[in-house]
Length: 284
Image (cartoon, rainbow, N blue to C red; front, side, top):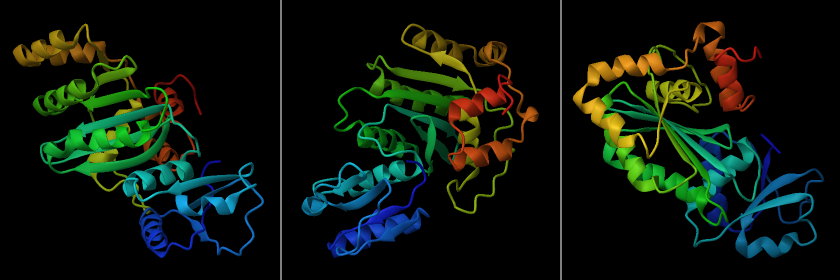
């Protein structure tokens, strides 16, 4: 159930005002149902409050009810609504991927949920970085009965900052067995300009983060973590040479990168499928 119209059915004016405002800001289509209106016949996602869930009895087979309670973080609820609309309504999601373009003044982040694009974001103060990551992981990990798979791709253009941010992520999630960290070559990632009328990406760093998400790099794990960063600090120039040699070659000239990114933003194609196209493993 991807990219379907959402329905709002509530008599709670406060909830209606808040969710209406957020959906409009996110350019998400929705239909307002009055309490006396007939429920849709096709499988649909209905937004309402936990106090009103009793009104949907005997309707659960065809409808997915996404309820909000006042004990819940409202922005987390909005993220779950966005996921239901852009990706698919699921009780649980299994994988979060963060692609990160560290810059001296801005940090661009593209987030993928279960292999499909969710949101992009720009951070202007590096102190907010790990708080942002923890918040998004916490949103989808909460109430999930298993540990989600986490993947982080870091651009290596500003190595001192990359090291700092990567260490924060490793300190927060390094104990997870289902986590993957990679260093990604940033070559030419900032040269692609995307005009996104729907404002799903706002800054150059967010576009760069999207491009980095498509690329392979050098994996960092518990066995090589200390060794790699010691080598970076002591022999940065030599490390860069070794790093380039170990990269899997990609050829972004074989595809229309702007067109590919457009399909990613529209959720017409998954990240893994896009990456295979970029690396020449498949043609469409």
